Image (tube, chains in turn red, purple):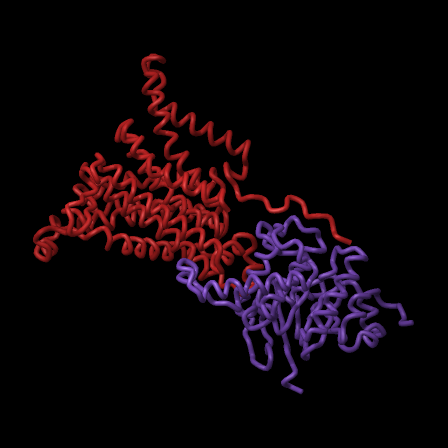
Amino acid sequence: MKNKLGVFLFTALLLLVLPAVAQYAGNFWVRIIDFALLYVLLALGLNIVVGFAGLLDLGYIAFYAVGAYMFGLLASPHLSETFPAIKALFPGGLHTPLWVVIPLGAALAGFFGAVLGAPTLKLRGDYLAIVTLGFGEIIRVFLNNLDAPVNITNGPKGLLQIDSLKIPFTDFDFGKNGDLFGFDVSSVTKYYFLFLLIVVVSVVICYRLERSRIGRAWMAIREDEVAAKAMGINTRNMKLLAFAMGASFGGVAGVLFSTFQRFISPESFALQESIMVVAMVVLGGIGHIPGVILGALLLAALPEVLRWISGELDLQMLTGGRLDAAILRQLLIALAMIAIMLARPRGLWPQPEHGKAAPAPAS
Amino acid sequence: MTADIVLNVTGASKRFGGVQALSDVGITIRRGEVVGLIGPNGAGKTTFFNVITGLYTPDSGTFELGGKPYKPSAVHEVAKAGIARTFQNIRLFPEMTAIENVMVGRHARTGSGLIGAVFRTPKFNAEERAIAQRSQELLDYVGIGRYTDYKARTLSYGDQRRLEIARALATDPTLIALDEPAAGMNATEKVVLRELIDRIRKDGRTILLIEHDVKLVMGLCDRVTVLDYGKPIAEGSPYDVQRDEKVIEAYLGAGHKAH
């Protein structure tokens, strides 16, 4: 118990000091950590669908897009510039506060999760994966093309000038560098603490869901759907709930991404991203929350670290332009994934094994 | 007497393409009885099981559970209505621990949802404690209490069977349906299983038993129904059924005599 508290305090301290150190090395690094936290949020959400309920979802990034576009539309000049009616309604422009949009984004993404999940209820495994992959792409294609005949999403040009996050009634602006209690705190560091807070809340929610009647029902469906039904579990409702819950995490991550990046376009929500999030969950240890977090952090940070290393080495010069950072990155990540899957097929940090072998019968 | 009838099925039929798997099968089970369902391989025993538990939708038939008609169209509804079952080829939740398996069985009898789980309301905590306590009791009851935190797949075959029974009991069933519980068990395990089923009966449960092991069926059941080619061919006490000409013919072929 004492040991546990120590680990907890140490981790907390580390997480608080981390941005200060990273900021010293350059805001670039804090930004990478911020993105890593967003990926942690996405991976945690997908873990509910894939890890707990066992529904392989390859279109998960669509819910990230739903959240991002929701905030993008509600807090950028785009809508009021396109529609005079909205301009008339909000002469100062549309600036919905993030605090309102986060729950709305969670709800809307959750709704989309259930709607997209509904037709897939009878599908399993590969077939489910293919259909969800299709749904993910449909959302992206919609975003890309909904600029005509009525310009809603501004198409491939994306949404610009999205509001940064401000705390109401103060001049505290997450988008600006400033100081806090005498320390120099850059914008990315402020976001770091916000994201960290939301990730911590999400981890708590995930743990609590896992150890509950609902969580057990999800896992029962994952393990054996027929037996789960025979235990009185309404598998249809439970699956929809899993889709909705997972999607709402994605929605929140999307809202945060939107305010952080202040620019979104359909490009950010490509299939590649969905696959990346699935890879994080699988690589880290499917269904095991610490593993999923580790997987997300590694896969989010690894490309950036590799980019930095190849930049330091000046790889492009070294190889006469044949090899650049981007190519090397892809290669090394692929190699790392193959190596991990060969060495640790259940993930880097999988669910602990209870009782590898049953004890000998007492009689 | 009618109040004592737990399950009453009449005229259940089921066809798969060209195969009439069940035709006009009926069964009546009274409270506290152990009723056996036997028949040669392919006689339709498991099909009948799957029909009354809602896994297959029947083509026709009337179904009553505890005097109330029910429609066996959704498995989870049937489980809620009060029929719990085990499976011929064990279907546990292999990556969950023994106690978690039983806790899932409490699902139908508990009600806490998302809000309770996320905010850990006092009601949720109380319910969760009750679930865990009841589940541990059931593990002890079937005799595998010492494997609480072992993953289901690590248990021995006989213990997995017993875990499945504990999980079925966790749903507080009015009727517990066991699909070949002794299949694949050795002689010692069968003795233990028999004691367990006997104990479950003595504790006031009603049991429907599909079994190949004639000795087990004859020793345990109050009444036996025999199916052959999807049709009931005999019904009565184990003693009578054993001597029924049609039953002997179904099992051994024509030309054998009762002795």
